[in-house]
Length: 117
Image (tube, rainbow, N blue to C red; front, side, top):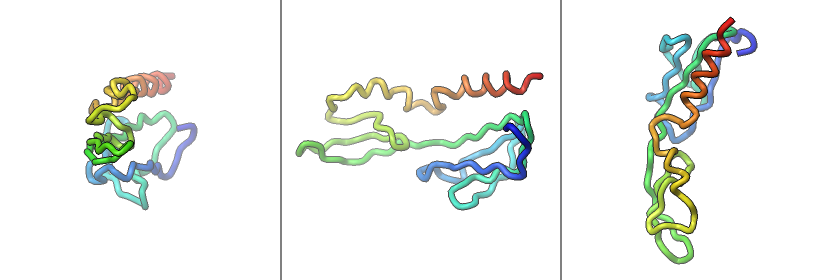
């Protein structure tokens, strides 16, 4: 944060089960509530380390493409698998199946580095 805030509101994706979203500030999990589609984490200060976690579950839908029915696996809005296969390199999307975002560790490193004096 560039300046202290009375309240931090974070938009959580619609497909997320709200009760599973967690806000931790400086390693302490805070009681969170919702305002509209936003997770209300409470007040934050400059240099606070803020970590928001929430699962994005996979779901399978049926879709018809070029008169062929496909079983499409989505994680959020990202296609991670299609059966029968498509002419698209879905192996590039394998990283989206993980439980943690592929940029998660980098973000934690940057947060820690930015909070050092």
